[in-house]
Image (cartoon, rainbow, N blue to C red; front, side):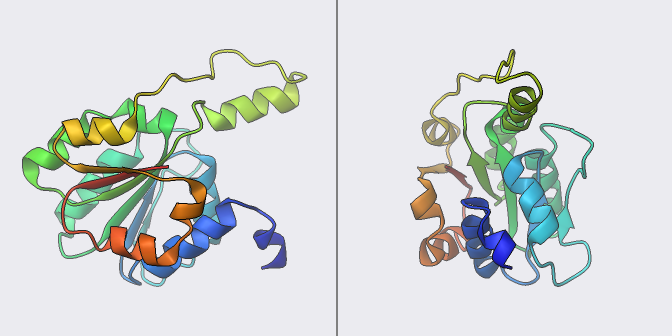
Length: 178
């Protein structure tokens, strides 16, 4: 655990998320650094409660998959973790969630970049990068325009266990954008 604790802010958020998510809750991940951390570290207590694209680089997989998981298992809490790049691949599914009453909490980690690709380019090409910077909308406001709650938080708030438990227990359409 000591080495994991050095991986901040991922460790802090991951620890709080695991403590807030019910043991039988479903965690769906897209392709992002936070999701990779969760796939490798997060304890999963029941079969088929971690749904992930693995390492196939299928950006955009997370949110629509989370909606499908919730439709299949409506009595389970479903939380999705996305990066801003992957989330934008299927942002229109916010409309589907509202139209069909699909209650999924989606946490979007917005760093205004295809973060993994940018890191690879930085490390492999002397700090140079191309085609990896994003110009995002205000995700919380965008969620609200679809008719769902949208919260914009910072890392410190998203590592607050009481706050996250309250958010995860929310019984309406909700997206958190960090």
